[in-house]
Length: 514
Image (cartoon, rainbow, N blue to C red; front, side, top):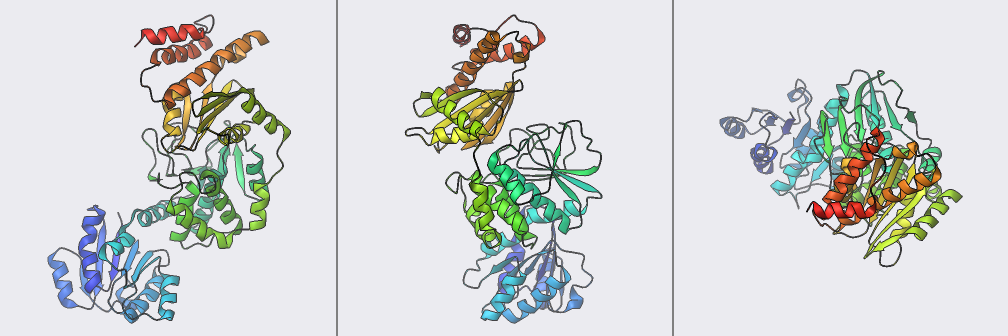
């Protein structure tokens, strides 16, 4: 439920008030109007809108009102709106305020409005629908909801990134910790796995970001509440219990299935979760710390490939908000770290081993120690002439790790990888950038190198074929082969089969199933 307080209700304000219930569509929301015009008060009451007559600039008129979530300053007069704004901001410092500037604003008035209001409607562009968007738009409501859920937490908040977090997840987590601290909630930015990508390590170390690395055996009992950032489901690409009660979810990836959480904000139109978190900083009227602003800008740049992939107007707006607070010298150091020889070797193997199918390149790099080399190799393949989509994968600790990249607007890699691999592992991401993890525990049961090589060869072929089939969008072309091979991946771990099917066997069974 959202409580909206309207101070001043004349020409523009009257139309806004009458349309708010229809635009928000939530019967549980509350609305209260204070205006000097008694005839307006009577008319609103006839329409079952709570209103009372009074001077909207009089502090006594709002002294006993419980804290509103959104305040609209809606008189036609600039001087009245300015005083009402100043007193409303002083009385309700955490409220989201939309103020109509009126028709006779001076430069001094404009400065006051821009400093105190979250959204200013100018007389030149004050169409009713424009103002209503400010009063009732989703991002304003999201900030109200987040504040409510944070202030309701009685204890410590665990803010969890996905496993082996990237810059967007790291920046988003530390930002939510900062916001929680502002409302009096202690929180930790937590992750499972490793931060092994050299640029990501440089980001954490140079910005001195306070992160907590957990192992699956660590207790979570110290946390009263849990938040997920840059992913949306516990137990999927993190090592939290699948049935964990989640309080807050903030993400920009399209969900694959129901998203648990008391407060959920999924903004698929944003190019990065860091963009969403920047909007929250603005809504909470918080100036970002230098390290947080630098991390957020880097997170946006990485997820949008320097504003060239799946970028939205919100990403550019967030960057402009962050830029004055960014440490440019540290940002340059983060972007140009020393590249380890092992990563260069992985990239070289990807180039050497690549298989090209039209504009798609797929490469297995075999055994890896550093899984963060995979997205870098995928990016390098994408830079080759004629390549529009890439998949690079490798094996580590009985797991196959996959990283995909695309520059084509007609390809959604997140959906492609989920369709191809979710039945035998976890997969996700968005159109231009995605990843997957497949358990290949059978590698541990192999007796010698020849047997390992044989198993790896078949798994490589399965991964390659499934990806190419999914990206070519040929429904049912190899369902049989996929189902049979995925079942073999499970059966052999249970000792129910003696060895892998051959590539020809898989193909033949796939044809028979059609």
